[in-house]
Image (cartoon, rainbow, N blue to C red; front, side):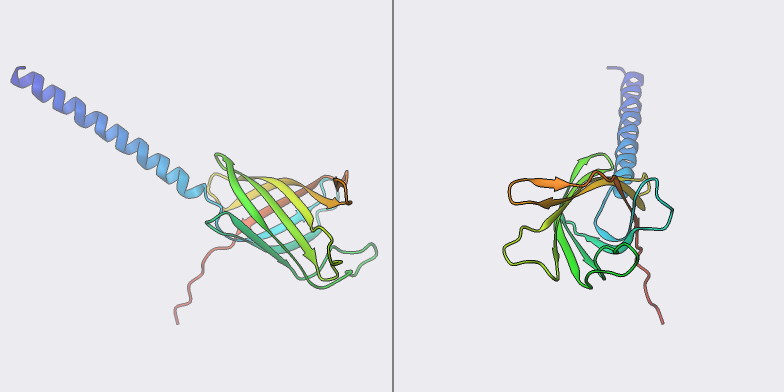
Length: 169
């Protein structure tokens, strides 16, 4: 190879390397926003109902694929009030695709009958491109002793990431 050919080959190799590094950096930046772990403020809505949230709570997603909900109260009763004051749900999540996650939670109530199978929540969550909000249609299921039953009412879960706010006196 002549000297100009070697220089041309080196220049081409450097250009290809820069394109590859740029593509990897863009992919890493995209992945940085496509992550679920953290603390989220959750709102449950019934599509088609007034814009008042049906239920709100905090939810934790951990890096190892676990999730926890601790509700201050159970679901509201017709006419107001709540049937109980303590409940919690735990479960797992996994990536289903770019910006999508499967979620399954099992819920216990403070008045849970011994031996009763916990209720179950199943959702597919779609995270926005900046990783700050998600939306998720979901079903709430109850085990009747032979099969899982769920209501015919569509439900929607939306989440907003709660940011770290350092305290610096």
